[in-house]
Image 1: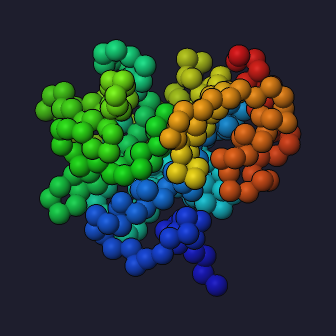
Image 2: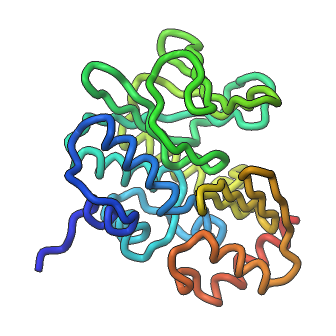
Length: 268
């Protein structure tokens, strides 16, 4: 029997069914299902393992082995699946400005997608660890689904998280598409440079039962009807929390879990 394609593999994992046509409803369906199915995580970077941006390796990791990944892995695979449906998709790099009061020039360490459909452009991003985007955003200024897009200049946009407490800046991205060698360089920096957050801290995120779960080292935050926080105190508690993000209990080996826990304890 022929090996299923990546669209079929993802649809099976997400529990969704086609027909998948290159129209807005399909883009919304796939985008919404992604963070509920594949978590954001940087375990390989934390354990000093190489992170491939080759499509076959990403698909095996995320779809076959049911692991997660970070932005380059998520969005490169999502791009290929969207193209399999028939969408026109381009990759773009971004400067993460999370936690800043004003945008400033930072390395381009994030990747997102722009989908062109019926003459309109949509931002699609299933790989931002701080906030799991659940829908594509029409590339126009204003608020959409709790997020705010602002045009900085003719080629740059700022994406922010809106809310009653005020905006939280997320990233600045260019409308000009990047090339694969640009992604190779950015991925290498994020995965290996000592200044990279991911080299020293565990970052996980995903949508579980409709609520946003974020794990930073030993600190779990759940954004639901009410915001809840907890801190793990033992390896056993930590392992249970990490396992929440995965669809199978055996995704992370006991040996790797101990190694991850040792790293996050050093980071505290």
